[in-house]
Image 1 (tube, rainbow, N blue to C red):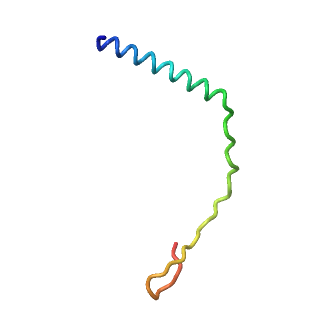
Image 2: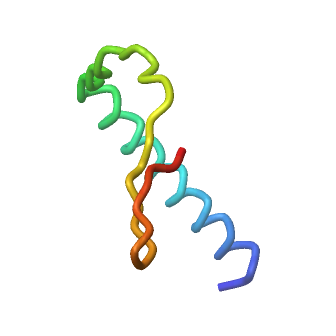
Length: 57
């Protein structure tokens, strides 16, 4: 088998694979996205370094 023949065979297999994947993707319905939420705004994260405790952004 020459390099060109091997390349053509590979490309044919690749095309068949993509056709199968596309068909499967069309068969399955898309998942619904969750509803959008409001921006939570700013938040603080509690921290502790030794004896120092506080909150940071």
